[in-house]
Length: 101
Image (cartoon, rainbow, N blue to C red; front, side, top):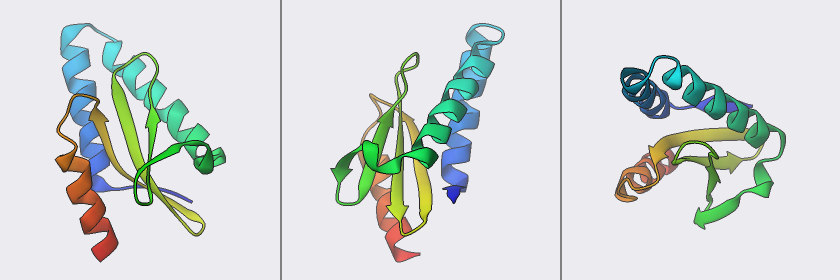
């Protein structure tokens, strides 16, 4: 089951708003790409590279964003959807919080 953590949802919303401000419907295109990538992650989570411990990263094609997730048993937990130039400490802190949950 795909679980998108609140922080990851906020990441998507923030990026949507930024892109939508730049050009009408660009935010919608971003969300569409993220949704498509999430579907692929849900279908084949082990295809994506592990970047730190059990955290895997899926790269978006059109937008410079990465989706960070953990595949636990039958669950896939999305912890972050971040710009690729964003400080990795952001998703690493979320990984620690997820492991404590």
